[in-house]
Image (cartoon, rainbow, N blue to C red; front, side, top):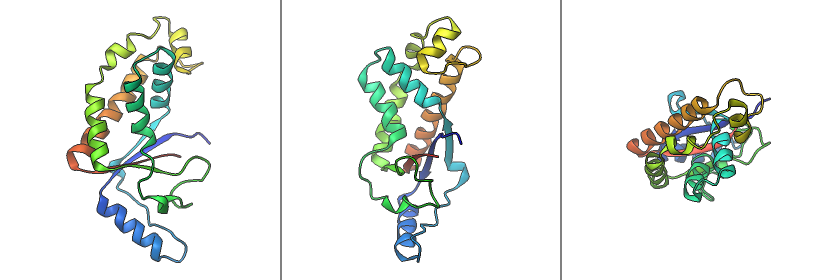
Length: 171
């Protein structure tokens, strides 16, 4: 079973509904079924981008933004999502970025110049893949990393524009 990074955009009202369902239901099931159009599976791409940034000494503020975008914030009253119907329990439970944090993250991702970051990739595709933890990757990883970053940035921009929260977990 491959683990991948999952994100979903949800309203605070949807989270409140799920919280009530978990509190009142016999088995604590929150009835978690967010709209498919508001979910994104980032695969492993963002993890490899974070690793590359750490390995090459990219400014800590960029690494912190990337990590926050996929790890969420501490706290955030979503313990009700710690349920087998939501995630498998092998990884940390889902984490939340409230709408204000989503707006901050979206703004920070927009300010990041991915081209400058990726210019640090070695020209040789094998060395570049190794720098990202992508041993055995076919071709140069630049396009792969750029695509996943664009997905992440677009996802957060939409969540921010709509005033939504983001829930992050590994599935």
